[in-house]
Length: 72
Image (cartoon, rainbow, N blue to C red; front, side, top):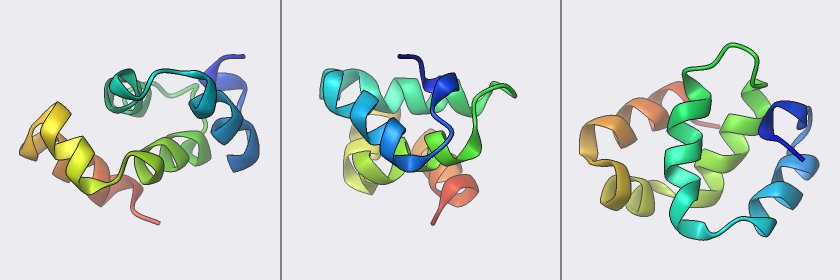
């Protein structure tokens, strides 16, 4: 399954559960720049990662941008 096929949060959570945690912030950041990835999928990944994990892996600036754009 691909993130672009996740049109609801349940499908996104199933995908997130099958991937290693360390790649999730980068996946969320890359998906946020694509127009064909549903917003609900990116929101789910961002929420799953949490603000601290996003900041540690992406840096404060990128994490803040993701959280501000996709805050639930």
